[in-house]
Length: 83
View 1 (tube, rainbow, N blue to C red):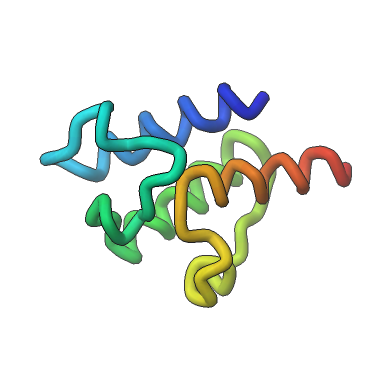
View 2 (cartoon, rainbow, N blue to C red):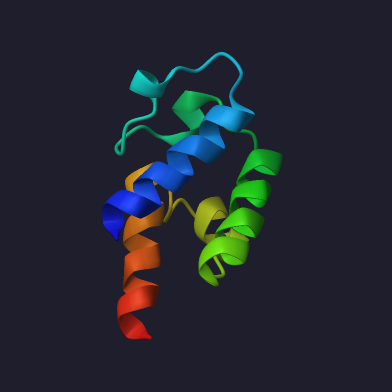
């Protein structure tokens, strides 16, 4: 499941980041370093909820608790495992 989540998020980010290539979008790359704008993160949240039914609070991004692709995947896995 983790691999599926990583792939889904990578696809989303490639849609938003016109200058990025697949090799740049690694699990430990910070969203800020990739140039992901706050509006892009909102879109990621919406798409994530649509596809997986997992709501990701904006506060987790704002507080720096979710800074990387892997942080987001680990959060999602914790929600899936809790269900």
